[in-house]
Image (cartoon, rainbow, N blue to C red; front, side):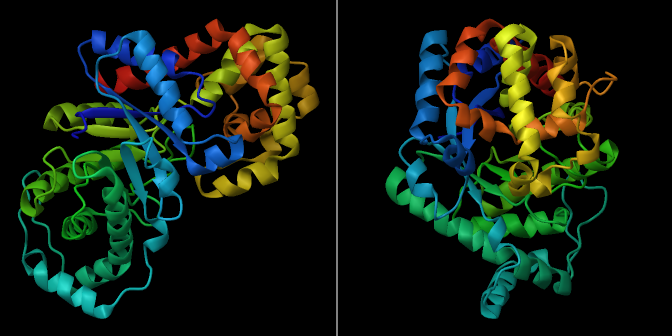
Length: 415
């Protein structure tokens, strides 16, 4: 199973927008660019909403059949580990191996020595990698530090991969390795040795998610210097290309950008570099579908607007509990959140403009947007009431989901 050149994760917490998402993929296909939809939903989201992993495949398959989609598509077991993977094995064909807990873990010093001896050609001697302006030099001390920090995580990834392999069989699923959940960005040297270790573990990784500079907060703009990101992204492209050949990794190995939704400042740089080098990309995820549902409800007015206001009011009252699990990937100034009584008096236009990600709009409130982003638990507790509202206002919701994914994500990235 080989993942296409361009792939985009499409999260759908309530499994209601697969058709609207697929419309966006059909539109970019009509523009001449094939982008693979990869539906995903994290274990945390399943637990909060009370759903099971097969529901993601069921919703996607129904939309694919209804739309007559003949292109590639996948279902991602998003950020799984050995403790959570089993519930995803039957319904997923894409597995994001989340090994963040292993980074910096305990490791046998003998394993470090064996690894460094095996890859002695990467240590100490200047290494010329096509596309890098200067030879890459990893001295022995740095190499040992990298191995000590990342070998435990890669070994965890190997264990998870082999567990999946027992059930799925060779060639029947796609593996991604996630290394982004660490405090320090990985430079070319770190990434090269990580990829060597991944190859040693026998993981045919088709995508890898490194840690870049800057902050990738959920559903809002990239915080950092886009030109610095571009330098890192381009260097990583070169390292991946070298590693695929040197270590026998899949020839379609590509970068994955996590929490990539709404990072509009770096999309032009990504677009430029993909075209310059003919490289692939996996972005997980594009288009914050849950937020577009709330925007669609608010835009519809009437009962839809009232429900959107209720979601905000309840999220505001529960803000500390809702934000705690996402503390590392949100940045909310509580003092700049409007009081629920203020929001209760808003018009449909005021609510939509406050929530929609348009930094040029004076009413846009990045703090409100992030709170609602993590506030889907409020809607989950509404049960059928929320789903019925989505159905009642389907036109408004679907229009916003499709527009956001196509116009603000797919087009800037790939056209």
